Image (cartoon, rainbow, N blue to C red):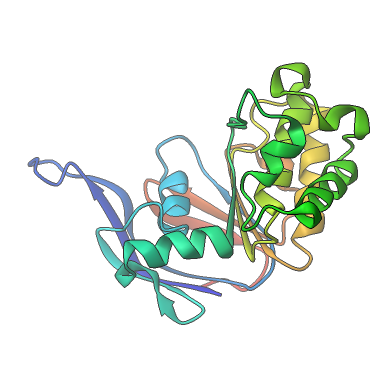
Length: 225
């Protein structure tokens, strides 16, 4: 699905001492599965996710998605791709505070109709939020419930690729592993990329890519590149 060729991201281009967030490497990612991208702060893992998801454009190199070069797309094409094929889960849930749980899910939907609302309710139910939680605003939900609502929002369009940046960092262990079970199940038919510094949540990952100073230091599981 993704073929990455010599991807480089340089910050502070105008300065004499440039900062290489990504140092130039090749990588191929599969069509489905749970893929962990792990490394310490500053290793480049979030930058890699932002480049793959078209939120940032690399300084050099190519990112091919199903044969299409993402680095040469127009802004409108990138927006359509993110809306129709990509989903996002972040460390902070970023729920709209004045909306109910159901409305927070449907707000990201490609269309907003009765079937979309029913789909949102089915997703929330599957994630352990019953009817009594559907109409609650985020402030009335627990931390784990808010994060699961955010995942339901990311899944409402059934994205082919789900990007999750530190999705469990703000959760206790019980809620963190509950979230990972949801993501692992979704990865059976879709590609789920987990950006994290916590190796324990990747125990069931199909592949773990380790980054260090903007380069791949190791790949464990799956086919290495």
